[in-house]
Image (cartoon, rainbow, N blue to C red):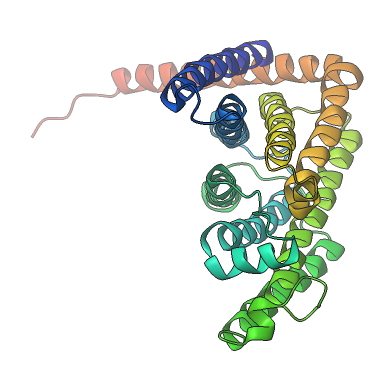
Length: 331
């Protein structure tokens, strides 16, 4: 079963890669010779950006499908999912502001010697999509009637969730109160009380959450000595997305001849590196440390499922026999 899902994930990645190459060829052709000396690299950056969007976005769905197939969310950490939701809300705020707000873009240019920020449309769509799908996973955990993980949110995570949510609320209030204030809207990020500084603070929330959220899942896998219930296809796609995201950031910084753009978007850089690091840990847990145990658990679960199905069938047959033995009633 795991092998089948892994194969499906690999086929999906190959398909996405082929589509990307076709799109790249079209974009380069449309650019035309001489229109831009960097036309190829800009087209490549565009394709890589949407490939990372697809890989990272698709990476959420194997877990949703796995939960649905098993009618269970056992193996998922409450802490992981709740922190994931909070982190993506923060990431969405940062990306939407940097991409769509002319005030934020102008403030960034002042702080970076006239250079543009490197947030792209695919960054915005990924963050918003991830927020929605993470919410859907929470819905499965609480409202779909699936078997739920044992335990509850640990106290430090509860405190962190409350604290970070409060921080986001403060940022929102500051944005409302500071609207039209030149110091707030136009000050550089060297001054703490500016819009740009607080947006960076929001991005750091995402980075901290991304680091912290992986730790409970790594520990849960270690505690159970199993990765059963944790989708390895999710991990493979996440690893691919992290690599492509880092590659796009590197290419864009090179094209703009502004390497400060890499740390000018610290959340994208940090997310890429965190994803790569933790995904390697998950792969080691799944394929090296707990692989044999996961296979044993899978076959044991399949055997229990077959046994339950036969028991229900036998019970149904007995009921049919009893029904046939009942005397016919007449009006």
